[in-house]
Image (tube, rainbow, N blue to C red):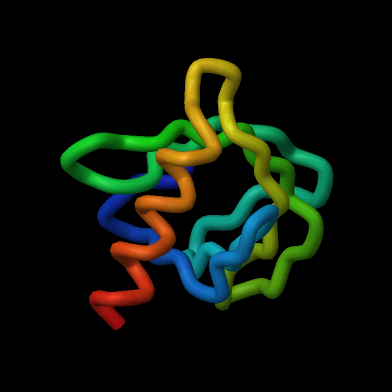
Length: 83
């Protein structure tokens, strides 16, 4: 089972984690790579830490090797300005 982008949203994004709202959830301990952002995507290596059935899951993440911390900070600022 995988998450389909049209069926998931993120919230409560911090420097090392986020909550993914989705009816389709993975199990605690599951790992996956997520594409974050649209124009210049950021790839995150994620691990599920908690599951709230019917609501979503809390995950921690680290930047994929080829991604920069500056790119993440820029994207976080853009998201904060848009909300």
